[in-house]
Image (cartoon, rainbow, N blue to C red; front, side, top):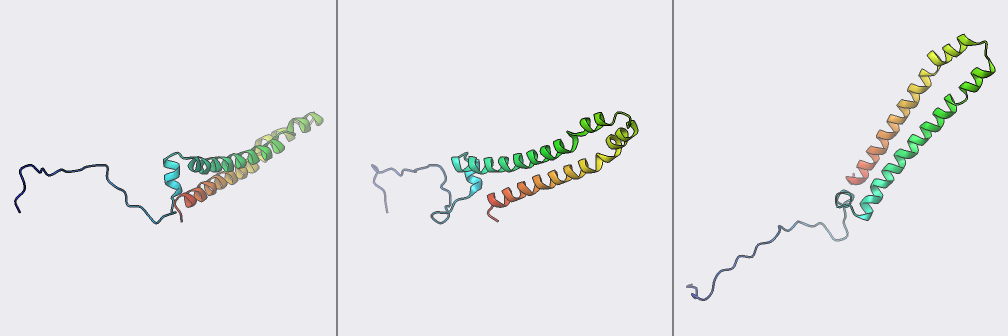
Length: 119
């Protein structure tokens, strides 16, 4: 098949096409990467749950440590009790509270990843 000298072969190039999934399928990860309103809502929900856990820890910490100055002021002669409470009795609740917070934050992040990765 000889070509006519007037006809030239034209090559059309463009951006590569992506393979699309079935209609109506979306991935939350792409929503987050593209910074859409839905992706912003996903990230905001994670931040809200993390803030809720932090505020719960702060409230328990305030209830645990907040009344101590009043208790110590009510008993001015109990210096050894003050040192015992501050030196020994507070560490166990603080460590348990910190451990609870870290586990809760990791669980929130794991749930978020599970939501985003569609598992």
